[in-house]
Image (tube, rainbow over all chains, first blue to last red; front, side, top):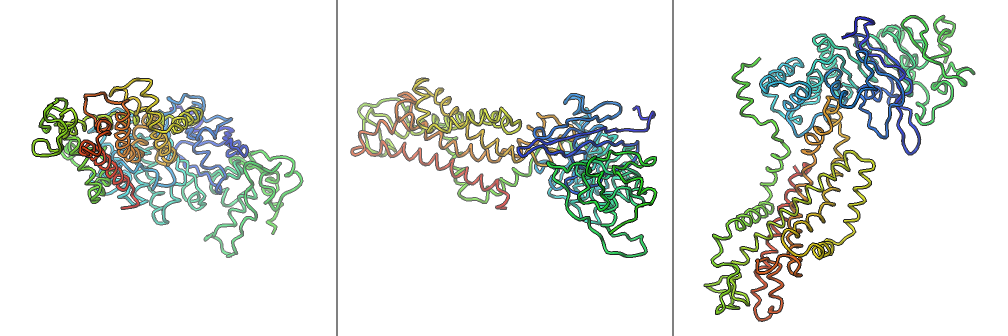
Length: 338
Length: 296
């Protein structure tokens, strides 16, 4: 694998995924660029409808088409543009080199097959092995995701499992062929809090055991803070800030990120303040405002914001932000106004 | 890690494709008395059709002149017809035509319907529009009228009955299958399968088919009854099976003029049709309940 050059396993450049509906064009993802380093966990955060999941699905070209279409961009995996390969070739990447874990484990498993059957299927799609070896592999996978009594569990149906256990099965299926990238689309949203932590710990240990990288998509900032090394914040289909976890949480340069930080409880701060929600709601993706997409909800908006969309620029090394006033925040000239 | 012998046992003993859906359905079906009655009728009928030569006391087309138009009695359970043929034997042999038509014609409908339904539901777009408008055209024909039209063109005969009934029935199956595919293809486990690298063929055959067969099985079972009635109607009208081959519909037609003097000529083939259709409808109805997990 050619990762030695720049240490990047995946590079997404200017990705645009639009949905063509009767009511108009929905720009679900509009010019996303990011990269994933070997062995890292990248977090993508944003509120509902900000294009997180569409970004994830676009990487494996799983967007239902029509109405969806990837209109522009490049997705470079191992130097190869996944948007240019044939469908048949792409099937060799899906589940083999890049795997996905879905949000709802209750509906992501086929109800008419045993979980053994489904794990074995994920192996047989990509590898030709003897039946005995496939079963051995499956048992190993179930052990890796810490399901007790794998031998018995192999013959159980999905409805005989709890939500957390099913998510473990989904993870086992996703790592069946030791993929280089694991994309987790809100893997813990449907689970309760204690199980969430277990699943995230499991993904972390699996990442280390299988030498893979993870893209974790979530709206839970706590998850990102604990597990991701870098974070991309999305708003209305566009990236607004992309940096390390520390920068995002302690030195955010975009008013939206700042707003997000003010709207969550922080246990590490001395002074306890009331949570401040971001006023207003995200714009319709069919009818985005001119200029900066966040300006209508932004308390720092100036004239320039109305006219021109701020590009995502590297304000300081390793910290990209899409705001006209980022430098002012950086210098500390702008104090938090209310 | 468990030892190898245990794994061997697992490979040989367990069939992984067994689906809990069908097991559950069978368990629920067994509790439904009417459905089991239907199933019994259907099984007995099929056995009668297969072993007709062993059960029938007489040759169904042999004419015994001196015994013409006898009422039911010891020698002839169901009496004889105008030409001196044993009605009991004819009813027994008639089951062959009915069962054959029911199963083969519905089989043809199911195969055509599933193919076009899958095409329409899974791929959508222009193929969906074209296929569904074709189905609409077929729906516009009254079933019997359509069958009469086709039989008039093709001419009478058992094979042509298969074709006529089979072709007319595909549209309903295509629609039902399309509907269940549409509801299943956006389920997350289909997306998950695609994310695992499964191709269209695998997704349709391994993931969509087993999850959408239930309504097809139910409708096919009920449709066997309908096909049997249509065959009887066609034979009644002289467009179906040709004499002297015994067919229940034909027997009804032949007895038409003698209702008042020899009602048994009409009664027994008529009863046979009613019981057969009832059997399939009861079974189909029970299957519908059995496949509905809400009634668990």
